[in-house]
Length: 438
Ligand code: DLL
Image 1 (cartoon, rainbow, N blue to C red):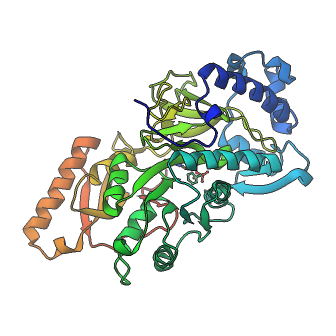
Image 2: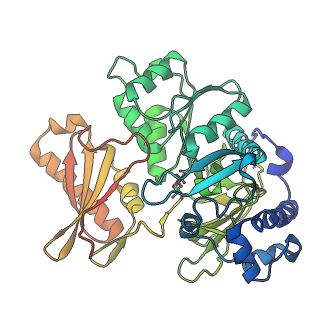
Image 3: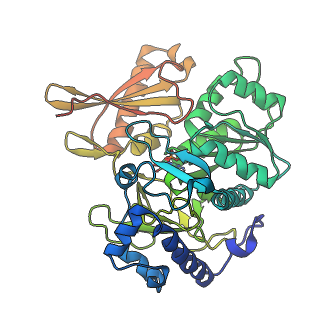
């Protein structure tokens, strides 16, 4: 079955795999040429015998190139990965992480142009059009979620409201005033916005919302479903990271069955995070990405630390670019609770399935004596607090049991009134780990 679906660049989006590989090889050579202009890659590539783009004879030669890590980027700060003269740099972005030395990415004019095109392609793939009013609730500034989508939406011809993050009352008022139809927002903030609807007399019926692009943080299929049902919209997962431009690496199409990773612009590999061995389609592992469209800061085989898998090619929409699964965790956010590995995403997946659970939660880890203690704090709907204590206790017990079934260990569960847990206007910080570091 093929869905009737719009395209931005049908020829590229539906290109045969052999054509995609041809483009990849040509662009990989080009990228290696750019990379050899940087101090960092000149050393790294020469060490493995790659001295010019011609040394890349086929796509398999990519495997000769060593991986690049976030530490490499930090150590190269500020200009070790810059491949062009500063006069050519049009824009600088950095990752949303706030700790330590930032990782900076430089964009030349053609880099911004190619990135913008990937976003226009992603937006159109969701069925959004130039008739839509687009409210960009992502933080502007150096974070790529603001300007990235802004440019993409303008290229599509949408009416763009560059409101940026935060100020929930104003967001809701603006959605009403301009009859916003499409949002760009983190899933956690959209849940928060939903919980505030109706407070100032503006309810769902006053809004014209029809779609949301949700991304920049992990979330489960249940969270997507919950958002769609609560708001009566279609929500599309969007994945990217600043090191690889930002959003527009992978985006869901109208089918909403995981995200097309734009393979004419990125080479994706899934590897075993422990050994570095490359895995096959369908096998889970760490996503490694090579950027094929950025001249000012080329990045080869970047270890994202995101765990995911790739679907084999094919989709009902007709696009041939492989789809990336939801991000299943990070190689570095795994909690180990008394020897048991726990991913925060597993906890979210479970609690969001429970209808009494409202929109905010927090995972809290500390120590009781020598043992780790995991507490899951969840907000529940206000009317439940008016019920009997026994009912609340039964609900608490039910949540404990649900979680135990998923994460093997039995957490403490605390029920909170809506609005009592910390609220995040950008990316949520769901895990608070207070265990002393030794
Ligand atoms: O978060 C870029 C972005 C902006 C993506 C807007 C989507 C929408 P960074 O700040 O560099 O860039 O953070 C990248 O966030 O390695 C993932 O761990 C996580 N992440 C991003 N999108 C998703 C997603 C932007 N859809 C890091 N699902 C990545 C799960 C995501 N995790």
